[in-house]
Length: 163
Image 1 (spheres, one colour):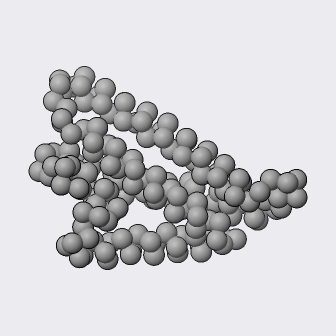
Image 2 (cartoon, rainbow, N blue to C red):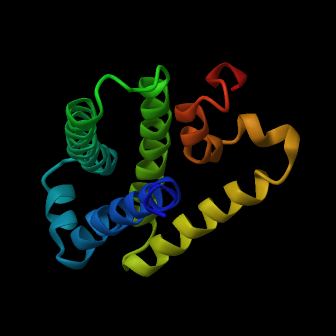
């Protein structure tokens, strides 16, 4: 039961965590009027958004790979050298999807002054990706397959070369 939970829900919890922690990055700037202060000082809007994206990406990257190293060390210590040959590919696929998701979250938080509008855009984006995944010809081209197929790549039931 625990392995089913880990395979199915850990990445979903990660998406929710990324959404909750980053959806307010730009909306807080609007609500606290700090965005206006930066723009009046001559900083371009695109520079502000890019700085928010880069800082969120750096924090996410450090957290993601720290967790990866801890889990890999834990697995090697307790289970020997039973790591999958496709481990790094699977982790890289999931990481790239999270970067896309983070970009959509930052973009959506710039579109609205309240966090609810940004969440709506993110939910619509994810819904669109899931709907596009229904079409078999689009499955390998859909970014959601990076997210949904990483466990199949990790277990060896799907070759990453098929993407």
